[in-house]
Length: 446
Ligand code: SF4
Image (cartoon, rainbow, N blue to C red; front, side, top):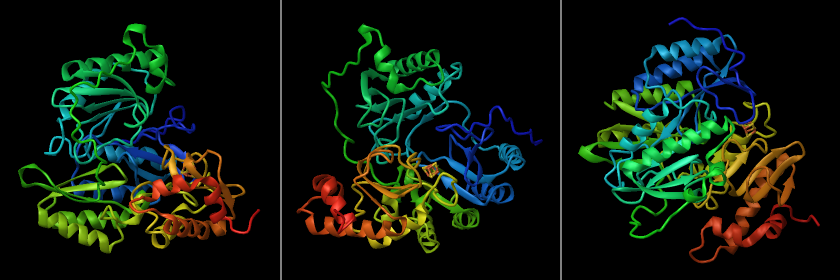
């Protein structure tokens, strides 16, 4: 396939821009292109993507929190070549609006309803709607074992029972504004109507803005009567082994902090092929789900663990959200992955899965847009420590870069000493509050 030159008008370097395959985004280590998929691919296809990442980029790949593959370190010359070579692979590339379903959708006996038909109806209907915000996202969640509850969505439909869907605007499942509860036949029409309104409002309009503009007779309604509460527990981690329908199994494996070297990832794919695994899907929480026989999945997890991949939801690294940081990103003030790796080994009991420790190179907070119980943020003056907030929120303490992990260890010591019976780390951090956390992080300071 012939490579087209990079379109400089489309090369979008704005804050908050979405790095698509043909319109890569400038980062600290060059251009970054996103490969968003709508379906599974084979291990051989991912191995080929790894080869292209080495040929055209720096050889580093990210798996984003939403399960998109990202190729790093491209140049203005190599980015169009990657675009052409990836398109020649005939992968199920997503074009247009992101309509996301959980990775086990349609194969998960635990889900309340299969979200795939509804998602497909929205995908088809949205083809004629232009002018939406680049990061516009629709989530359709059948509420099975792996859910998309923590992902931000402009429009979210979650299964209430086998016939009804709750529609929320903006935010996560916990923070989104409930718009209505609808029958499946109405849900696609309602989502498409809302998308049409967003398109009319311009490319900056997002789902969270919609409530204010709705006519009076369309004010959000939610009776709450007759709702089935199944599936309301915390969603499972994607890391580990899942038994699916028809004897199929899936195993979730991820590179530490969402970033892998192409060689290591290609070796994992080669081993998956050898074990007879025929398909995989990049998915939430920076993970890859490999689908195959039970024994093959288990053997692949052992192989992956030996090569440094995360293979279990109890791995402390799976409870840290770290952006690429320094030196990969020019905005970064700290080496986030070094801090995160030390945190995982030194503060494992603090990382109990009740919150994501957010380690970010700057206040933009790419890796975790939502508030966290504890954030370590690089600034021009050192590392800021933020409790119960986002990276750009007011810190409770600031420390020198070199003291970052020592401060975190002292906070972990405090939580260990003060934790009440049955209390998790997130609840303990919230109860201790900013003054006690600051005193622990910066002992001796007035
Ligand atoms: S949050 Fe991290 S990746 Fe995002 S701009 Fe800041 S340093 Fe770069």
